[in-house]
Length: 231
Image (tube, rainbow, N blue to C red; front, side):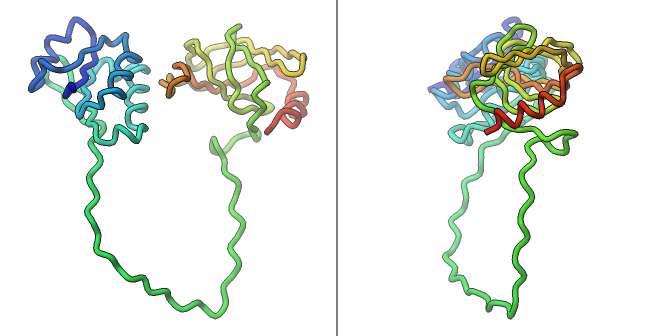
């Protein structure tokens, strides 16, 4: 089993290997191969993953780090970002500490108060924080296209949507939107408010998660449409 997985540009790989103890048995992947690197990481579960600094700063590098940190089977892994010149080292994820065995304690239930007020009803969860319009989860048969590329709608409102798109999108990019459901198609323009690249768990493919703000959509139609397709 390899002790280290190393990811960076091919031309700086020899310099990165020189910085590693036992670098001879490290698995190396070019910065253009994050999916291959992720497959090797999940298969071999090495104790150390080293990313070259410039790659770690890219959307693909950040997505790979987030994917590793969110995987419960990789809690033992240390993720380290280094520069090929050797003047920068940063640990972004350390192995989870082993919990010490605590002594068994006998719980003593406190006496109940004479009177207890009924708990207040919790507020409904807000997936995205404060919004100018409520967003709803929609049925799977709702289709959206962004500049002609099929995207999966995550949630929808009268003024915007969150979607998963296989093509790269960037903030402030202007896009054409088409929403289709029950043989009804509506087209309008939108602006990308935010976008981030994600390495999804298999069998899902890598994608961009984006938030778009509608520019010239019919808000009244969208409100009725949201009610119709929400789950």
